[in-house]
Image (tube, rainbow, N blue to C red; front, side, top):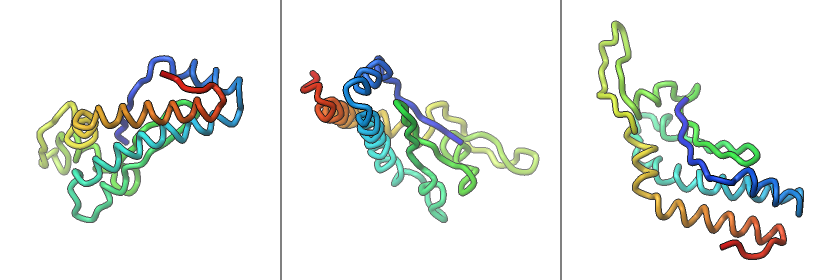
Length: 138
């Protein structure tokens, strides 16, 4: 299963601070981070080749506490990593797709949409802090 991540410096501290004000705000933070991953998926999905559509449908966001990840592949499309990053597969490794360290879909989509992603992330974090009663965060 392929994963892509964005690390936010201080997110654990922010999460802990918000939970001290309101234990329910952890859910708000989780939803805020999930909205960022969903944005990335919505941009990457059209880039993924579709024979059956299983690979594109396999892109999912996974949110746990103060982390969110984009997962791809799994049982429905176990070939996703090869599709995105390339390599050799098949009998005697006879099917070759050029290997790209940054992949073809998720990372390039993230690179192309970095500014929009950052805006969504900042807005989502501001909304979560506002709902917790902390007020505006700049």
